[in-house]
Length: 166
Image 1: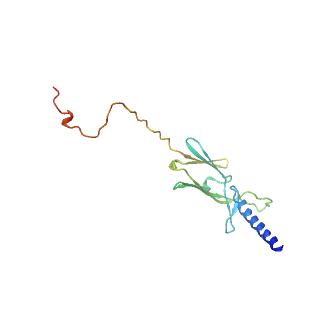
Image 2: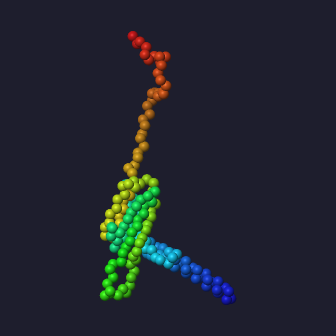
Image 3: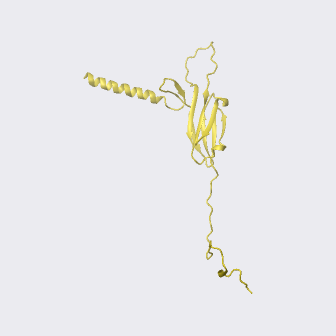
């Protein structure tokens, strides 16, 4: 039974390793990349109004000078860095749960947005991005008239045009 026990142990170890890696992929937390370094990922909410999409990014402790928003080929990218506060040599950290470092989020935008009119503001640790939609294009209703014909041929003398009507 040693072989069977070893197989179950290997399976359990593989499962624990997989859970360790995926547990850190939740947004707002850090996750480890293959190189062993860690990356911080801020949480994002995306809502829709009649006139715009609203993107809200949690960025407490990130100054507006530390954030860059770009939009290219239908993808909006939000990147920046949350920096450590100056640590004093006179204090000892007992618990450190806040995450710091560079971050990057990319959001694929719908094709019906006005990318040139995207607006962003920051308030109370939230980055608020408004992605406007174009005004709705309403179909023009065409009136159908009875008994009127439309021709594309040029009138000729046989049509009675140009004759003396006396």
